[in-house]
Length: 105
Image 1 (cartoon, rainbow, N blue to C red):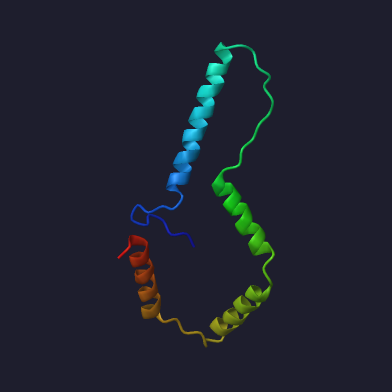
Image 2 (image 1 turned 135 degrees about the vertical axis):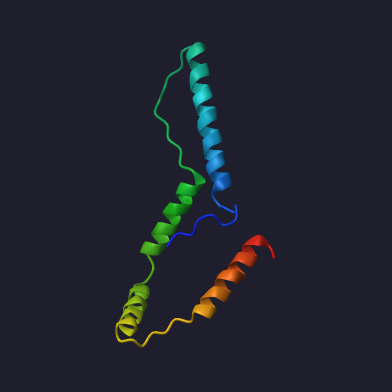
């Protein structure tokens, strides 16, 4: 599930803007380098902070114990047997409290 438009509070917006600014700066440097003295052009790559964060999260998830799969299987069995009840009020209250926390209310 992906939640979009958190009232303009995208946690990655500044990071994405920073990446765009870096790309623009690098493009300007490349254009300016063509007018100056010849330099050796070696391959170069950079990894954004967001990519590092995703890689770290992925490796953490992959190294997690399989107890999560067991929990999912147990809940799935309860749903199929009609034994799993969802409290919509509790979910709504949790969502509202998370929104309030994000907005600093």
